[in-house]
Length: 274
Image (cartoon, rainbow, N blue to C red; front, side, top):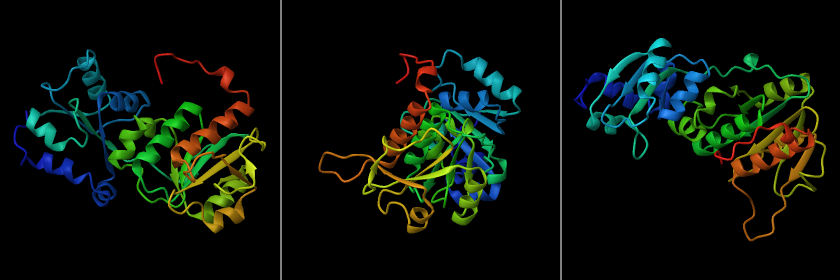
């Protein structure tokens, strides 16, 4: 058991909070029981699992440790003070794993005819990226693409906010020209969401192949994306605030696309899940 916060492994975990170190090592952190379970369920193979018996309360703890070990993880127990040092969330639950970084090349993505992807332009806040991944997972989107990427997909707060969906939704990073050409090749209509667009998002046809494009709240979509757009849509606003949170906006447009495709009726709704 590691009991010293000065242990080299502890310092290595702290270093992985930095993007530069994640890119150098090709590793990322996954903290939390639920996030770890989702990652393992996706087939991802952890490098190491750090767990703290003093903090772990999950009834399935032994089984989760066995799953991680079977997937190739080196198991390391740590004391409560060490875990609280390496944890990046409040009230940690005693689970922290190191995984290989998620590949982000466009060439990896497989989008079927009539598919749907979400494109995020310069979204800086990791929490928003993570929330959009959760939406993409829930809606069954084919991919989420950062173009350009303002933060890396391995940011611990992206992983946390996604609740593990980083491992279930294909992601990519790309430059604008490269991505537009890729979308055209796949006949995905580019749907740009902006507050002053002339048409409501419920009044356009989203039933075919689409790429829903959202931008950073501070600047909105760039002129380049507006020039590339096949459709521009707005979400009607009735209050004093001039825009919704970007993750909320993305969720509304994505679920309108599902509604138009008749997919909502197919969903197996669980009342115990919000």
